[in-house]
Amino acid sequence: MVGGIARQLNKGDSLHALRRDLCYAHEGAVRHRRHEDQTAQAFCLTVVANAIVAWTTEYLGLAVARLRTAGRPGRRGAPGPHIACS
View 1 (cartoon, rainbow, N blue to C red):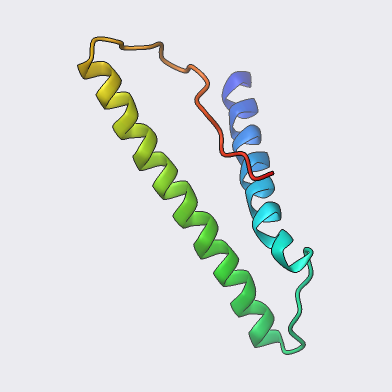
View 2 (cartoon, rainbow, N blue to C red):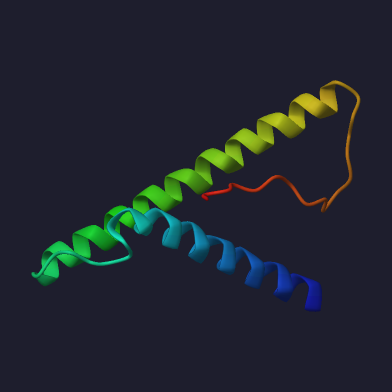
């Protein structure tokens, strides 16, 4: 149970770090004055972050499948590569 909670916290921290790195292009600032525009900027950030997570999940799944067909099963729960946004 404790490991699952820590894993979920790590996922949340990683997602927050990804969003922070994506938002860095605007120096982390919301540049719009109107609430609707601010909401649109936040929505765009969410869409881009979700697209990166979905692409990474699919890509890593294909990589694991390819390794398994090559006879290298790996271990369950092994840490995988991470996106470095620096």
